[in-house]
Image 1 (cartoon, rainbow, N blue to C red):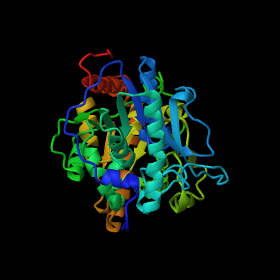
Image 2: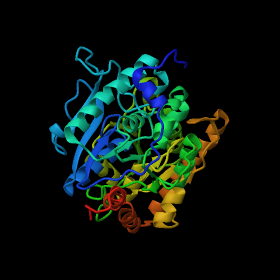
Image 3: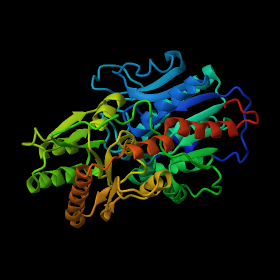
Image 4: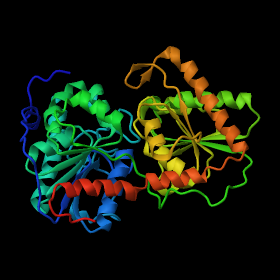
Length: 452
């Protein structure tokens, strides 16, 4: 998509020049947290929430900015005072309600669990209204709260905008793979983010593979900005049952968006075939929501199997933990992912797991918890595009899903206990461990360590 001319804020991003100097702060630390989309609904949204909670627990002052539909109430009243929050309001289902931006919240994925806009569909006018709305909230927050540290999410537009508007404030950004995907899916916006992102002071990454992708897109001159953080599990919520329940059936659970890129059609097809090939009493639970034709097609695929395939929709973390605790196998046959938080959550609750063998996942699990057969990896198909498999590889992909499910069922029948592994995951990937890594980065911006 070509732009005839740039708007004010897009010009700022496009023409940004690095300061090239080290940024330091004086304590006490005051953090401005920035998320470009809705809290809770995605991995980055949960990350944002948990960071906010943990920061509040140790008494560090913070102010948060996020996006949400205009017809929704403030969603974080139990976490932070509304006076320490600003949000960009986007068009909701009730279009009569006034909003800051007259289109739905743009999603960092093209398929979101709520009504959303694709960045690939952005025009010049949409880009400018999006940037202007976030700029207004950011400037008000900085004026009112006077932060000395910014922590944003995604190496994308709003992080770039935060860097450009406040070049003197030290800044850390948590990288999530969905932001890197937009560098490919919305190529016409890439030029607006490259220079500002390269001047961010610290970038929290999940693994070495993610660092390679960042270097490819942004061509960083220095790599000492990268800090391997990984993913975290709320161990107060995600823990196993003390004893196994006696069950007359086996429960397989998928957690994620109802979209093609997550491999849900292939999962449903594999499950249908297993039902024909085995006498086992099985159920498939699909946790998560979606929108548009992809969601509708997926629901149609399960028609006639209402007693076997259950769509549970979007649920909160406590409900998710309960479903994982009472499930036997977690599965995520995604075509594009980094280290899915829900994989760790499922292992923490005592599930066996099946996941696509995507770069970085096996490495992270093995390095953290050792070799095991509790996590089974599906061979990834060859890809036609960033998240679309070659049609000819789909039959083998479905066959591989079936083989992994059957293997895990055989392990469960042999009564192989997995709670020892659940403890390993909770010890290695707890939110406390993760948060301490972030605290170390926060402290690195000041010569006096406020936080211990």
